[in-house]
Length: 171
Length: 215
Image (cartoon, rainbow over all chains, first blue to last red; front, side):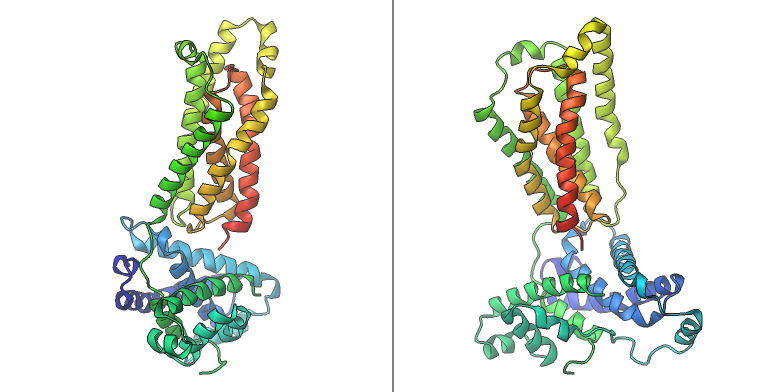
């Protein structure tokens, strides 16, 4: 995480990938305890990853990382349950079935973030689309959109912050 | 994968590309904000209201030093609370608020012991309570803005509470600056009018916190 805060992309990517199963476990057990289906777990994992990203300077580098991560995950889990609380349609039978037969593709969220990105300003939308849907890297995105790489990074950063806001607003 | 639901691995890949070096951590950002807040409050107070003319004489008494000590320790306590509230995993050090309360109790004891009861209500109302109620909230606006701006990077567990604590810190900083001008030194005056003024900023902070600090 210290390397990540210093801007080391490889270390940061590795950290986030290693964190994901841990976050998934917390999200699933939290949902199960709330009597909810674990199908929503991946949405929570993704919200937590975005929160870890946008709030990463609220971790103090001299403090242990795990309590901070737990607190971020807990906050997003509570937030998620509160927002969806009114539409509780998952009963216990559903739940046991989900636990017995976990999805083959645990990495897929039920929400469509690409559609959500439609609400972003045009420049940010284009960058997110190029990098996310077309899988381009920063350099190719920059040349495809005739932007500097710095401008791509800024647009990506703002676009992610915007997505985080929208995720909070969606039900 | 066009228009399908998002895969977590892809999200991680995108987030990692946004790994540009971050600025200082939240404690450092807040330290800068508190310095700006204190400087702004004093820099605004000195040319407009001015430091009281008899500050040297007042400093040798009991009540003026106790007044400054009470609001200054409240500011220090509120700063500690804001620092903790900005981190999702930190517990609030509630005990810090005991210090200003004790200082006020000592001052109130001194007041009751040295004044005839008939004077107490006049000393509570004081001379310039109107100025106090307007000046402290105004002096606290820049501090509140500076603290809330730093807290946009924070991850508070409760946005409203974090905003209220930012307002409390801004109010206590502004009250300390105003206290250097104000000649109403009775702790009764401080509890009532400083209390109301700081509460106004605390409420404003809570309102703004709900909008600005949720994540």
